[in-house]
Length: 83
Image 1 (tube, rainbow, N blue to C red):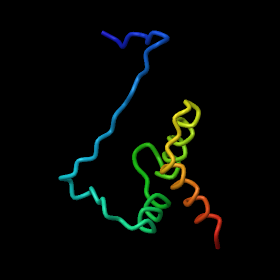
Image 2 (cartoon, rainbow, N blue to C red):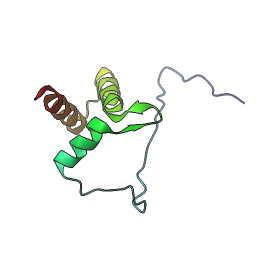
Image 3 (cartoon, rainbow, N blue to C red):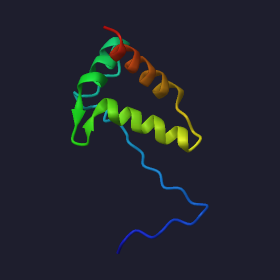
Image 4 (cartoon, rainbow, N blue to C red):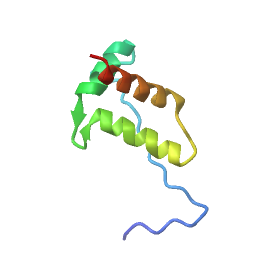
C-alpha cells in the first residue's frame, strides 16, 4: 500500500529526535565548535552546511522561519567569508 495524497488542508511533518543516550549527542558544544562541525562535517546526504541551508530555506518558504537556525547559517557564512 502506497502513501495517499494529502488533502489541501493537510500537512506532512517529519520529526527528528536526538538520542540523548548516544555518545554522539553533545548538547554542551561551544558555539565555535558547533560552527566548526557544521562547516566540516557531512553525512550520507551531503555536507551538513548544505543541509542547514536547505532547512532554513524550506522553513522560510513555508512562512515558519527558525530564528536560531537562521542565525547559525549567517554565522557559518560569515566564518567562511573571513580569511
